Length: 93
Image 1: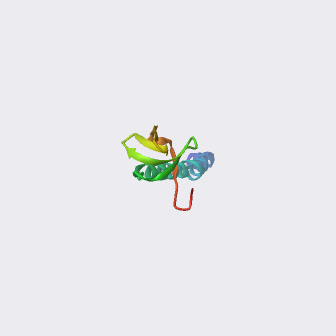
Image 2: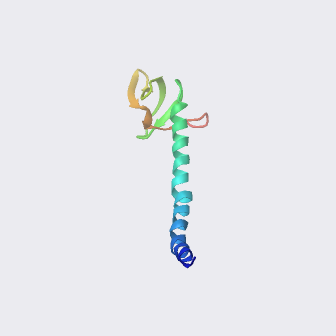
Image 3: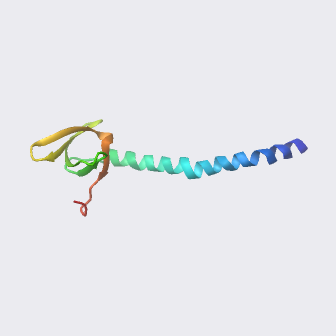
């Protein structure tokens, strides 16, 4: 019984660190990753977006892993779908 108490006394700081790690690092990262996947899966033709590199444009076509982005009249570029930073709303320019 004394060995169990010593084990608990020695192990609770490690257990506490694991719990803190979960709530401060792992859980928020998973939540952010889920939101990003939802954003990438919800892309549609005609949406205005900004890429990670800061390029503004309108989506002309989509495939599973790429998008064709119109950045000026008669100017299209092909980008990886994962390069989308965010979708512009009605208030954004």
